[in-house]
Image (cartoon, rainbow, N blue to C red; front, side, top):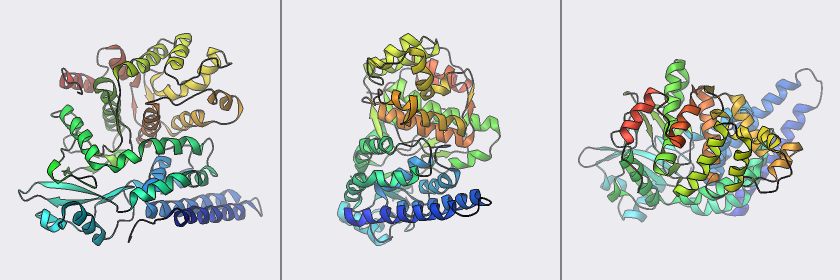
Length: 449
């Protein structure tokens, strides 16, 4: 890669060309003799997935971020395509080293080789906004250095203007995928991820809150070497999260519970929310902990806002549908006056909270698919109900992590007492698991400030 592709017209030509190739490929696969048609269509999906993944990876920015989010939509995006898109979490094409040097000259007036005792020229990870290099400080500490792609801010502005086209191309092969929902989510969060100094401040807040935690680890930032376009943090050695797929079921459940507790424990205990769940952001450590690496999409909630979320959950847990309806209306998820009775609304909308509606639930592709399908349905009774629904302040992040987390958890088939865990956070119930007991001991007296 030599640079981020710039210019809205130039960046628009890529999805237009992709859409044309995808439509032609699908048409050829669907005509002719019926025998073998399913296999031809499967091949067409796979080739389109390769096409889209390559383009999104090369374009970076919002285009690549869309691919990452779509890859987590287990059961909605076809297997052939989500398998290809999942490569965007770790295998994006890197930028050439002279561009990395240019970023350092701009930020520090020096080359990376003069700032670090050792700096690896090849990145070990390349993502939507930047890529990460291993390095070593003068004192010998190993660090991970995230370098933002030059031109990515301009590219993101153009991509967000054209975002629907790329998402719709995947939507042609997917059921229940509404491009506007994904694009709206992107516009809310992605621009905030461009400021690495803001990200570093958020990461340090998490690091302080989870210092010495029994099963969660957050890397510390090196603030004196962090700027708006360069972020330096301690390097953590671990196995990629995708390796959890090969673990025994009990260990997968434990890993899933750690991820779940980090997401919702941070929200309800510390009023902080890290809204970018995907496998590339987690590492499995040899001591049994999970490291959480990325803090580019963090938001903070007021306690009164969270109390509205708690009321929704409490009503669900006791199956009080009238109270649940009032609660979702109060926080703005459902507009008042919707012409549907409580049971009809519940039947359609409860899928958003499905994992906590049983004492012990296993995340599956089918469950993740239904959660997303119901929330993005545009036709039939579900579509009529969704037109009375809204995404109030804060819910964009919750929706992103709820669906993203469902995809991550379905990917490893995690099973657990999610209802009991949430009851700990919203009602002060006793810990539902041993991890809950350890977590409560570690977090007593700690609160985000």
